[in-house]
Image (tube, rainbow, N blue to C red):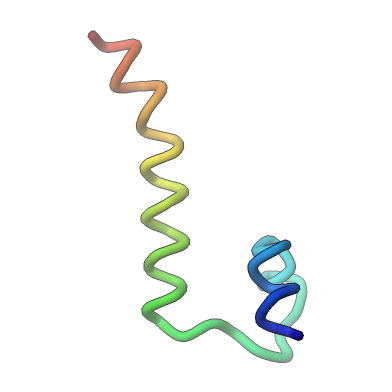
Amino acid sequence: MNSGAYFESPVSESSAPRGLPPPVEQAVIVAMIVIAVAKPFSRASE
Protein backbone atom coordinates (compact mmCIF):
# COMPACT_ATOMS: atom_id res chain seq x y z
CA MET A 1 0.00 0.00 0.00
CA ASN A 2 2.84 2.39 0.87
CA SER A 3 4.52 1.77 -2.49
CA GLY A 4 1.33 2.74 -4.31
CA ALA A 5 0.98 5.94 -2.31
CA TYR A 6 4.65 6.68 -2.97
CA PHE A 7 4.19 6.48 -6.73
CA GLU A 8 1.03 8.59 -6.55
CA SER A 9 2.80 11.36 -4.63
CA PRO A 10 6.61 11.22 -5.10
CA VAL A 11 6.89 14.67 -3.55
CA SER A 12 6.03 13.19 -0.14
CA GLU A 13 9.45 11.50 -0.02
CA SER A 14 11.12 14.77 1.04
CA SER A 15 8.59 15.43 3.80
CA ALA A 16 8.50 11.79 4.95
CA PRO A 17 11.87 10.69 6.39
CA ARG A 18 10.30 7.39 7.52
CA GLY A 19 11.41 5.57 4.34
CA LEU A 20 13.69 7.00 1.68
CA PRO A 21 13.62 5.28 -1.73
CA PRO A 22 16.57 3.13 -2.84
CA PRO A 23 19.32 4.89 -4.82
CA VAL A 24 18.01 3.28 -8.00
CA GLU A 25 14.48 4.65 -7.59
CA GLN A 26 15.88 8.02 -6.55
CA ALA A 27 18.09 8.14 -9.65
CA VAL A 28 15.11 7.29 -11.88
CA ILE A 29 13.04 10.07 -10.32
CA VAL A 30 15.88 12.56 -10.76
CA ALA A 31 16.36 11.47 -14.37
CA MET A 32 12.64 11.90 -15.09
CA ILE A 33 12.67 15.38 -13.57
CA VAL A 34 15.79 16.37 -15.53
CA ILE A 35 14.28 15.12 -18.78
CA ALA A 36 10.97 16.88 -18.09
CA VAL A 37 12.80 20.14 -17.36
CA ALA A 38 15.23 19.82 -20.27
CA LYS A 39 12.57 19.13 -22.92
CA PRO A 40 11.21 22.71 -23.11
CA PHE A 41 14.73 24.18 -23.16
CA SER A 42 15.88 21.87 -25.95
CA ARG A 43 12.82 22.82 -28.03
CA ALA A 44 13.35 26.52 -27.35
CA SER A 45 17.00 26.33 -28.45
CA GLU A 46 15.91 24.80 -31.76
